[in-house]
Image 1: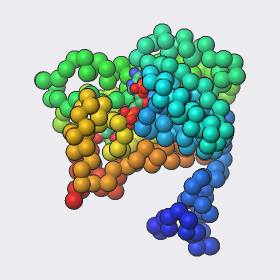
Image 2: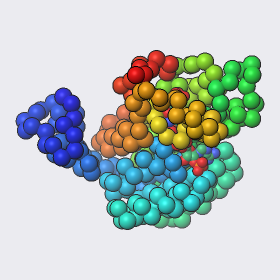
Image 3: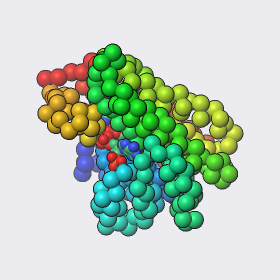
Image 4: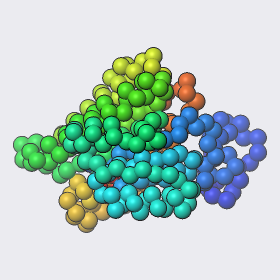
Length: 288
Ligand code: NDP
Ligand code: 8X3
């Protein structure tokens, strides 16, 4: 059944809708959470796009936030917005996830009141360029691998032992349809997202029996700063990526991330793939 939209109540006694959308039954926004098995949430790449949307979604259900990124001015603006909107407590981290020592040192040095991370959203990531491998830029490859794969591992390595010791926690990785498919010019970016998929699956096996949950949310086309970053500030080229179609927005992915985190503790959502209705595969897009 289509969502009736904000301000329009769903008809009563619609059993299946209640089952699938319990938190949206009476009022689509703000959400009324069904289960909150967490208190403190750490989001990497919280300064923009999907990471910032995840911060907003978790703040909306009362979480305390550790927000990490390189652009701390953006984090300060977001923290101030969330404090005003929800009274959210936030701890900000200036962090480049590619720097193994900085990641280990910064996360080991979290103040005691911020050290117990219940949910880690491994979101920091980027694509660079769309060159063929034989014409590729080695620095771009390094940046993608160092951020999307090694950075995600460094943060995971630093925070998961605490989750294991506490017998609870949740790692939610942001993968991509690029972790399920490969497209021309995307060999290295797709390789990094395939790696994220493999790490997510392997981590789930390694954590079996500990009570720590592991999920991946894998988006298709989401209009954020992703394409502007990929094309190094060429806004016209970035705009063409989404021309004539309706892409996802960052909140669509944050919805899925929050949904994973708000399942009861005995439920692990392994993987969610979210694409725009106008996208059937990495390369098959309906444009009008
Ligand atoms: P944005 O460019 O809007 O945001 C990327 C975020 O990652 C920023 O907050 C940026 O923060 C952070 N980041 C990048 N490099 C580093 C680094 N070295 N250290 C710390 N933080 C870093 O893109 P999205 O929100 O779209 O991307 C978020 C995730 O979603 C990425 O993993 C991306 O691969 C994935 N994704 C995106 C899709 C899309 O279509 N947009 C589709 C599928 C997956 P700062 O620069 O301040 O450090
Ligand atoms: C980012 C989106 O289309 O490059 O993962 O796979 S795409």
